[in-house]
Image (cartoon, rainbow over all chains, first blue to last red; front, side):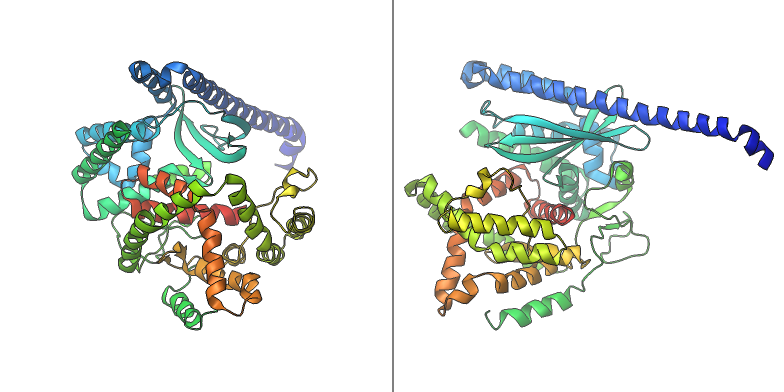
Length: 213
Length: 264
C-alpha cells in the first residue's frame, strides 16, 4: 500500500487536484452563466419599463404582457409553488397542482406587475455569485439602488433546461419561506382546495384594487 | 422605567422558555405539535444555504414558536386598526404640512441622540471598529452637524456605513434564542428576546435620563417613531398587499429579518 502511494501518489494527487479544480471551474462557469441570464433579463425588464407606452392607458397592457413574458422566462412558477406549499405538495392532485401554480402565478403578477409605474432610476449592482457544492444551484447577490439607498436582493437559481429563479431573498427575507409560513397556517386548518381559492381570491382582490386606481 | 413593565417582561421570558439560538423549528408533516423535538431539522440561519435548500422541502416551516397566538392575533388586528384609523391619517397630515428637510433633520437628530444604544451594543458584540465608526459619526454630526440635525458624516468618505445594532441583536449574538413570538400593542411584532432587548436599550437611551417627567419622555419616543412612520407604513403595506395570510406573513418576515440582522 505504501509503495502504491509512493509510486502513484503524486500522479493520483495531481489527478485528484485536476478533477477538483475542474469541478470548481464548472461551478464557477455555471455561476457566471446563471448571473448572465439574470442580468440580461433584468435589463430587458428595465428597457420595457423605460418605454413611454407604459404610461399610456391604451398601450399599458401590451407592455405589461411583454414584461410578464420576460419575467416568466426567468422564474420557475412550478418550483416556486412546490417550495412555498412544502411537504403538502405531495398530496395535491395533478389538477390541484396545476390550478395552484396558475393561481399563485396570477397573484404574483397582480402584486408585482399591476402596480408598475415606470422606471424611476433604479439601478442594480451585481455583488457576486455563490454556487452550491454540486454546481446545480447558484445564488446571485445584488443591490438594487432605490432613492440612493441599496436594498440587498439575492436570487436563487437552479438549472432545468435553463437557469431559473426559485427564490428571491430581499433584505434577508426569503419570499419562498414567507409564503410557506402563510400557506402552512392555511393548511393547518384547511385543505388544498381552500388554499387554492384563498390565493385566487387574493389575486382577484389585488386586481380590483389596481383597477380602482 | 415603568415599574409594572419589567416584571411583566420577566414573566414573559419565563413563559416562553427561551429556545436555543436560531433554531428553526421544523417539524415533519405528520407531527403538527409545536415545541422542540428530536427529529427536527435545525439550521443555523433563517435562510438555508444553497446546499440545504432542498431539505426544507420535506419540512414544515414553523419559524418561531407562537404559544400566545390568540393574544398576538388580537393585537395584530388592534394594531392594524390603529394604523388605518389613527396613525396613518395623522402621519399623512404631518407629512403634508412638514417639509421633507425638516422631517429628515428630526430623523437625523433622534438617530444621532440614540448613539449610546448603537455604541454600547457594538462593544457588547465585540465590534470595536464599528463602535469606533459610531463614535466618529456621533462626534462629527453633533459638532459639524449642529447637534445631529445634519448627517454630515454620511458624506465623509473615510467613515463607512455600519449597521444599526441594538440589544436584541446583542442577545442573539450571545447565543440567546428568540423565545416565543409576541405582538405588543402599538409597538408591533417582537419576540421574548427582542422585548428584553428593548428594555435594555431603554436604559441606554439618553431620553430616559434627561427628563423628570415621564410624559415628556414618552412623548419624545412616540414622536421619534411617528416622524419616520411613513417609511414603516410603506413596508407594512407592501407586506400586507402581497400576503394571503397577513398575520403569518408579518410574523415570518419579522423573524427572518431579525435573524439576518444578527448574522450581519
